[in-house]
Length: 376
Image (cartoon, rainbow, N blue to C red; front, side, top):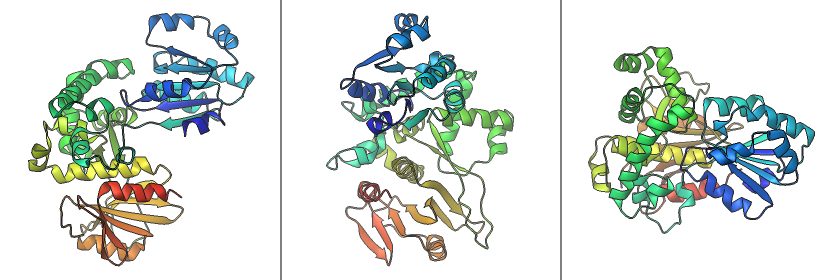
């Protein structure tokens, strides 16, 4: 995907959380090309851009990779002028953790000149089929966490990640949020995972204004830590819940914030079902970016955990943490009304089976493989 984007766009930006593999992916691509790469967190590399116009002119025929570009957001205006002088594809590869400046600048300064690629931590569909999903559910998809020698090493890495994110990354990305305040909010959100947001109640617990809360949530969205799932609004003669649902995007980070260290502890936790739902929602939404995600809940309590919509086509999903899952009556009712092209119950079953006509029960890995094979 990255090579295809470089072949058609003057600039490609790889955006994603830190430690998800952006630099590793870039190094793999750069080995096959005549390229020059600068890490803008390195003082010596920043010094090479003291006169950026001269640097760009000298390396005009090479692919220029700028890592951690949020450190020098003023470069975006210069990149726009440089690309307008020479719009050949594959001139710039930009890497960076999302930030207020980075997102604004790529959307405004480089509109029509840049292709954005979101890189997530490992998804289940990217993990070999023979690898058990249980360690993934506990550890999440960040490479250093997933591939750690044991659960304790993995948990220690995630604690360090959270501490560094709070104490270093948030200030470096331009967000003026005190670390203790953000840590408290993050842990509250972990306990609210999978629930619709009550902004005024959450702001009251945090003793901040609703506007401030929304700004903090936007920051966590921009840094790929949480996902706010919008309500799906079909033309039904029912009153619908219209507040978004909140999920922490990486199950390993979620487990760490809830002090869950291993699989047994996860199964015993009262939030295990919500953590399962968060895992599956993130996998499906990230694996199928062209499908618009949402959820559906009526005021009467009927609910569909995840709706994927594209050009009027619907796929419906319910998540159940059970070896013998039973879809809810509300799911069946809404399924009959919406007539989706696919409907699935995602559960930790050993093999897929058809529970009712048009409704399949599937383990997450098999469901993902089938859906990714049918991207169109």
